[in-house]
Amino acid sequence: MSVKVLYFASLRETLGYSHETLTLSADIATLGDLRAHLAHRGGVWEALGEGRNVRAAINQEMVGADVAVADRDEIAFFPPVTGG
Amino acid sequence: MSVKVLYFASLRETLGYSHETLTLSADIATLGDLRAHLAHRGGVWEALGEGRNVRAAINQEMVGADVAVADRDEIAFFPPVTGG
Amino acid sequence: MSEIQRQNDSVSVQEADFDVGAEIAALSAGRVEVGAVASFVGLVRADKLSGEGSEVSAMTLEHYPGMTEKSLDAIIADANGRWSLLGTRVIHRFGRLVPGERIVFVGVASSHRGDAFAACEFIMDYLKTRAPFWKKEDTPEGGRWVDAREADDEAASRWD
Amino acid sequence: MSEIQRQNDSVSVQEADFDVGAEIAALSAGRVEVGAVASFVGLVRADKLSGEGSEVSAMTLEHYPGMTEKSLDAIIADANGRWSLLGTRVIHRFGRLVPGERIVFVGVASSHRGDAFAACEFIMDYLKTRAPFWKKEDTPEGGRWVDAREADDEAASRWD
Image (cartoon, rainbow over all chains, first blue to last red; front, side, top):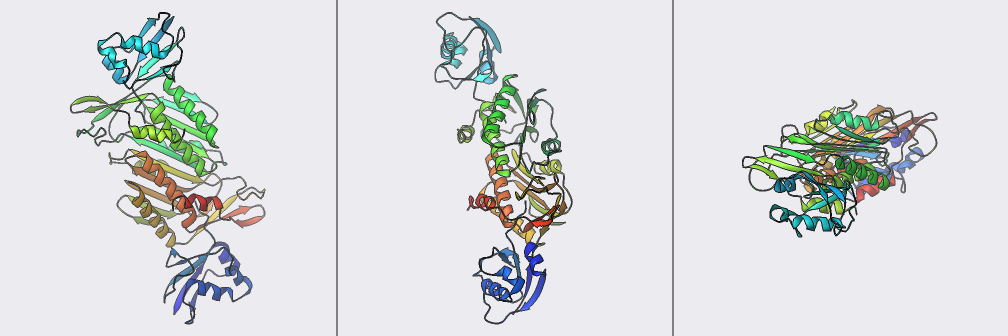
């Protein structure tokens, strides 16, 4: 399963990545699994760890950690929005 | 005691008067007294009678029937407002 | 035209139309503490305002000169007491107006949007029940005074 | 510039400024059933947004192209389900903005003012918590990402 992952705003700056393409192992079923997997990289990636205020979207819709990820999904992680 | 009385909108048209100057007898103490006095003229003036939906202002401030009238007051009677 | 002016509050009662964009821009011009401008434009609707099945071809707004400005000024003073505002602008037209024409403008500037929205709606609700304006519709059957709407009294009483 | 267009609803996400008067006029142009247009303009404030004592000299708005338009369109669809609306217009800028500049415009047309006001405030509240925009302030000490305000989450949760 291959997904595109995007990072925005302070999270993008912290990680030093705006996007990456990932091939996911079978044990990553949900958005929460993917987030934990990324945080597990350690270092700056702990910005995605549990307790950090991070929001996420799948295919441009904000969703919760329980939502399943699917092949070719566009997944985004970002801080709480501050527009308007 | 002399007061100026103004009439607006549908009330003005019904009465056929836009304004008049009245010298009030001593028994007219309040706005309610004045209104009853005017309604007592009969005919079209019954438009000011009890139960008719009429609002009033003294010196350009909307007030209730209990408010006292004073010499040289500007008093106005009109239907509920419908601006905006 | 008649105007009452406080520092950043102003009221106009006039026959002429107004420039909505210029009025809104003026509420924040040169004032970088303004973060929010809420505004409202009321227009003459062509549909059956009184529900009696006839099209409105025009309307004439009568008002009580002097009291109009005084009541609008009191409404604005009341709003300034309730919310933290940086400026208000009220324009109300009188005379003959055809469908689609602007009747009223209310604009409110504040640091925060909550105050701007609340004050703008408050001023409109009070204006509908307290400012001495009366609408007469021209219909094919002749002139017809518009009855006050209970909904307006209810809207205003929310703020009591 | 990107636009999503339904019959009388439209969204633009753009770097360019916009003409508030023209946008408000367009919401009622040629549509005599519109009696009310409520609108909101959000501006860059110069004062200490984060309460840390330094003046903001400019800010840069980042957004998530594609999702931005999608989320704004969803907010408008939601508003249309809640109130009787005749048209909506949302414009949100991105890029670098200095104090006093317009950031966002929301305009809502309806037959009645209550629906126009409620939908306009609803769209702003949701936009602040759901649309993927992020503000970075330029201060004398360097760039600083603006933290989300709890007040915004509270404002949006009123509508749940």
